[in-house]
Length: 274
Image: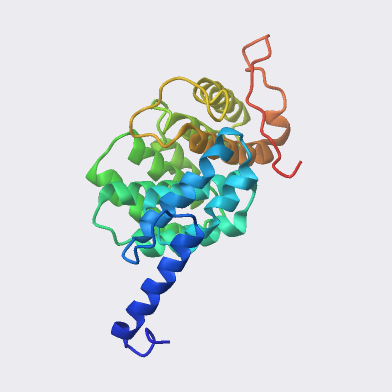
């Protein structure tokens, strides 16, 4: 009410008092009313750590639920959206994307914009205007043309229905941050264009990369220093993989490559509702 009346100087003490109450409720060792929202988000993440080790994703999501009202940094939004997608919480994912977009879309830091555009394009239920996503991806690619920005641009084009443009942009090489998602989206783009053999080939390659980098949510080879935690990557991979399998249907059921006689190892998706 104070905010709506333009009386911000009267609103601030109330906000600080509420923050102190929330910090204590989250288990902080202090009640410093000057503690930042970012510190509170860190407390949520700290509480989630043992549940991450146990792969209890419902408990992790419960620990992270207060983040919505904390205006965390963009990396924390990425963490939350990855878990929401894996858990099938499309409404929560949409809400998180919209809140993060409102908070960071005007950022002057390109790395924040890159992370924002990445997680806001991981699923079609993002609640963000597709043209805005493409425009942001164009800016990022023009400023720093590399595999990460090409991935962002290619996925944004796919979400806009521009499958040919997506295929022309999505990289076929890259790190664990890039290649598994790129191959999965390439598979969907080929399928949408009617090239089932190419879709199948890209899908098979994506499974190999997923198995390579995330044999489990918490184990695997050393990651790039700029990558999120392995379990976050795993959640992102599994969410997009589920979308691919739903789209490709029978094309994705036989997991042998078209030119191979031996079945290939795959990373099974886990239905979080089971």
